[in-house]
Image 1 (spheres, one colour):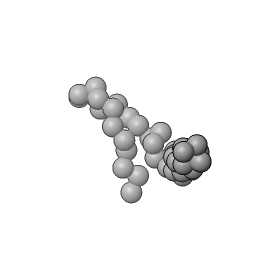
Image 2 (cartoon, one colour):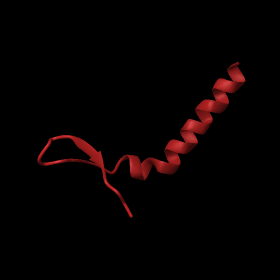
Image 3 (tube, helix red, strand yellow):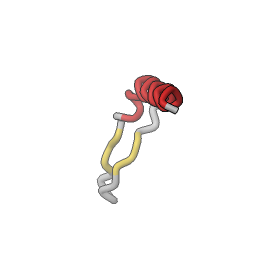
Image 4 (cartoon, one colour):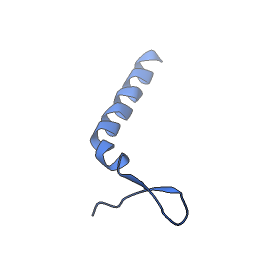
Length: 41
């Protein structure tokens, strides 16, 4: 069980590092005040 948890955490960590630039591209909508993620393409 411990090995599965460690593997899962490693995968989440690797996924976060791969997509960190996108995850951190969050803005606030001036009209609604809600946050959203910029589409980089």
